[in-house]
Amino acid sequence: MKKHFVKLAAIVLAVLMVASAFACSAVNNNPRIGKIGDVKIYYDMYSNALSNYYYYIQQGTIDGETAHEMIKKQLINYGVTLNKIHELGLEAQLTDEEKAEIAEDVQSSLDSALSSYKVDESITDEDEIYNAKLEQLKAELKKNGTSFKDYMADLEESATENFLFNKLREMEDAKVTLTDEEAEAYFNEQAPKDAESYDNEHVSDFYTAYSNYIAGKGIIPFFIPDDVFLVKHLLIKYTTKDDTSKKEHPEVPENGLDGEYGVFDKDAKANIDAIVAELEKGITFEEFLDLIDQYGEDPGVQSEITEGDDQRAEGAYHDTGYVMHEDLSKKWAEEFYYASMKLYKGEDWEPAVDEDEDKDDKDSDADSEEEPKTYDITYYELTDGKKIARVETTNGVHFIVINETLTPGQINYSEHADNIKEFRLKELQDEHYTKAVEEWTKETKVNMRDKYIDQIAVALGLISAK
Figure 1 (tube, rainbow, N blue to C red):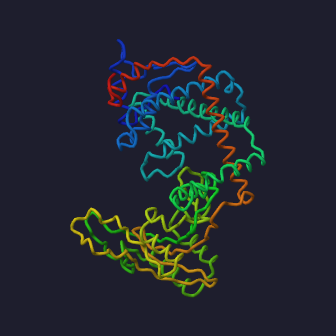
Figure 2 (tube, helix red, strand yellow):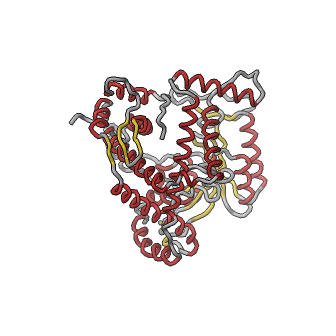
């Protein structure tokens, strides 16, 4: 981690001021707060970690005391792991190829920092643009009391540490194996548990697990409840949405199209007209999927999967579509859910009235029954029998189609063996690595200035004074 601290966030600035108040005779904005093996822990490591929690503390998602304890544990794990890297001499073993990879990461970090700077439009030469941005960065660093040399040293130290942490993890992961027989035995043991976890009373839990599986972020649920289906859609977004705060509907652009919750400009209207023309002419399901790729504006179902931690990462749902079920009305926009269910259940289907919805409404007539909400849908039939439902939500106009109905019950192991083996192995590797860090911690001398750190946390209002 960095020992030279660039003050870029208000919370970090505040933390450093508090730290200065606790320093001895000379002001030290970055005191040492611990030593773990041969690894020195500095205050900026705590404050950097705190800045990652600050938003969640402000939102009330996590309380200050919990964040404080998590950060202390995080710092110990960091120090213990880095000390193990030093003990194994991993940095000295870096190959030229690995060093070049680290250098690329450093340059990528620098390029990312420079991307936030703007230069005069009269400068068009790429080298001149780069140098102009670089001078702006240097000036900001100098203003914050940090030299460019120290900044680059920080980037290199951080990139090297990240690489070595990953290398150590790979070394530990390699110690864990999983045979085909062990993976199948795990499936046979876990399947009855999934049958309880994802039965018809727990569709929402299934939705979360299966969506993670679709996005490549988790193991497939071993049991599928009844009446689960997957929908794809072609979305054309509103050019301008309603201003809900002022309850104003935007003016329709010239040659544009008026919508339920916004308006489409002439280009969006032209795309909608082209899609409708194709549907009215008569196309196959595969041809409709081509239209999604050509015109669609939902990144979740467009093109190919890209890297990312977001469950709805770009392209993650391209091949499958989104999970839908009658019990998932709260997961989707009302209109999108309504149209999807009509496609699955039939045009006569209507949502059930929530009997608890108006229990606390004293002005409501106890004997009256609220009519379920309905929405305007236009249907198109594809030449191979599938139906398309057109409906508008606050995002724009959707052309929805059922991609697949999932077979209820226990899944077939052989059909999903690769996914099951991949994520079961990862689970075992995670367990192994956690135990390894615990063992390293027992073997390592950990000396943290807990009282000092707690004092600062009290001053910041994270914890109460003891």
